[in-house]
View: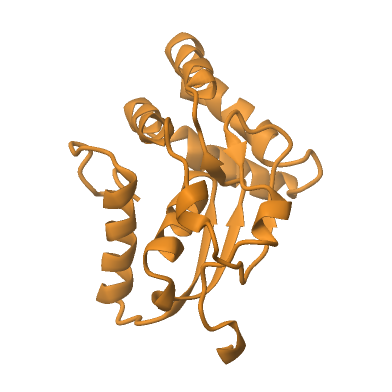
Length: 177
């Protein structure tokens, strides 16, 4: 996902751009239809991608993904934490929000923490910035789900509710698996 790894950081963040990026990667890999998994903001992108082009998605799995973020409360908290205490403090909080204490072996939790602590501060804030005001409820109306969802204990935005997922679908041909 932009701007991690060797990708550029100077671009205008938007959900549509990230959805287009996702399909560009799939196209480059020669994937006409594929299984899609997304976590956190990546789950929001995955859900938006499945809603935009359901014929491309074989199954969809999301974890800790907000379907809407009408307010900036969580982003403001993250911003204060990043500015005051730095990326490591933000990462420590996010690990607690993302994973139950016994969800990961210590070495896997350390690996994840190390990866997350390397994220550029501005990228974290920009990624959260486009999320404010996102609401996929209307786009998802009338669709059914073909994959599982999981929610963490504390998301400062609105996670995809499990009861919502059981009623909404975005993948047209679930029986072709």
